[in-house]
Image 1: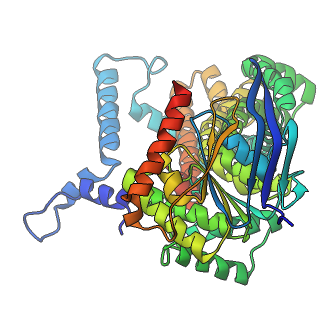
Image 2: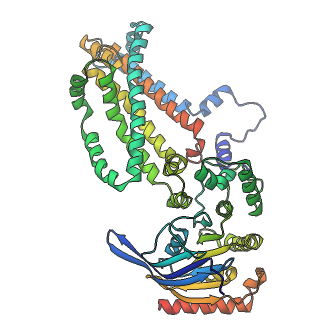
Image 3: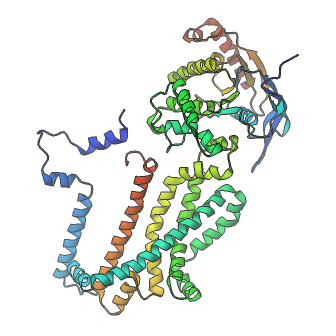
Amino acid sequence: MEKTPALRFSGAGQIFDTASGTLEALRGVDMTVGRHEFVAVLGPSGCGKSTLLRLTAGLLAPTSGTVEVFGLPVDGPRDDVGIVFQKPTLLPWATIEDNVVFPIRHKQGRVGVEDRARARDLLEMVGLKGFERRLPNELSGGMQQRVGIARALLLDPDILLMDEPFSALDALTREEMGFELLRIWQERPKTVLFITHSISEAVLLADRVLVMSERPGRIIEDLPVPLPRPRTVETTSSKVMHDFSGHLRSLLLKRAA
Amino acid sequence: MTSPAISAASSSSARPERTVAEPALWKRLAASPVFRPAATFLVILLVWEGATRLFAIPSFVLPAPSRIAEGFSSIPPGRWLEHVWATLRVALVGYAVSILVSLPIAMALTRSKFMSDSFYPLLVVIQSTPVVAIAPIIIVALGSGDAPRIVITFLITFFPLVVSMTTGMLATPSELIELSRSLRAPAWREFTHIRIPYAIPYIFSGLKISITLSVIGAVVAEFVAADKGIGFFIQFSTSMFQVPQAWAGLAILVVMSLTLFQSVSMAQRLFFPWSLPKGSR
């Protein structure tokens, strides 16, 4: 018997009503993500990647087809899904620790001692021990995004949704954050849906890469990444990585041509 | 790690010293931020005084600063205080009512497209009505007492508040609103935890505009009907041809407005230092 996947899209479509008419963001998306699997969604900008993520988070309902999380249809936001946004979007007036405990304070109206202890543990895990009392604008972009990751992990979600989380960072920090994320993922296994438009990032991080078409977005390729774990700096210069990335690039370019 | 704002501020004000001795007193005074505007003001007063004497300008046209000072001291301090209190009371109560009314209006405009479509044009109509023109009508409708003056002050101050609050709340990053929704938090916390704090810098620009408008509102109301207040005093003095006294009243209004404005700025600095732009902390 097949195990229930963490996430399953069956013929999911999304059409938005806008002032200038309807806009079909997604059409007939079929995909599954297994528990604790790391899946990257790769596609050109404006292809509906973020819509995919918002459907999973329950922030949107599909206009056709179904979206299921752990076998149950998504009918609204849920506690077992954490989101990391493209920009860290921290609260500028709150300390780093207060930013990490924000989901609990916002949801329940108060924060317990054990929540704060948990936040400090998470901050230590993302390498920000000692920064608890700082304000967001005292931190670099990469550090702020680490806070964003810690915040998303606070409620210990089964599924972590990441919407191009490192795209606002410089290339070097971006690569560093990728390895950092892999370390965190190994320490606390999660089902990760990682939206990106960077081929190398997708290949380095994911177990599987889903390639999306331009709008209306569909999954046009579903490729397992032929790289062993753990992945290291050496992985980035390996021939397998190079060949696989090249394969993906030609796929995307062929579509665009 | 030192904050860049602090290091930048100290490096710009402290020039490298050749000796270890403290700089001369006048040098420290000259470096203070109030020195230049104060010196400019002093020079203007001197030129003003000199010009009115030199050209023998009659005091009903332009009284010399010394004549204004005489006008000021010809009124006993107790009388001044009564007038100041009457104006200040109306300005502050009108301002407070304005804040209390604009916050829920701004929240409604932020929350719902329907509300903003329905009510925003009406707000613009109210704002476009010259307050000076409706002041007599309001006074007739509401009779004597502070009430009509407070309403007039309210009408003149609340529009900038509603606009600044709404703009600020709508400027909140959409990701945070999505985060709030994804947490299924009570809807009012979207305001108390996210939108209102985010709007603080905007709210304070509205508060700063409105506090000076509140003095204008109170004075306009006094022009129409009052038996006390600085606005009333200015009108009364001019009708008695006591122009230097009227100028003294005007000077007091300016001081009052400046003090109120500075109090609002100080409140922001004190309670919401993070809301100030970098470099001015």
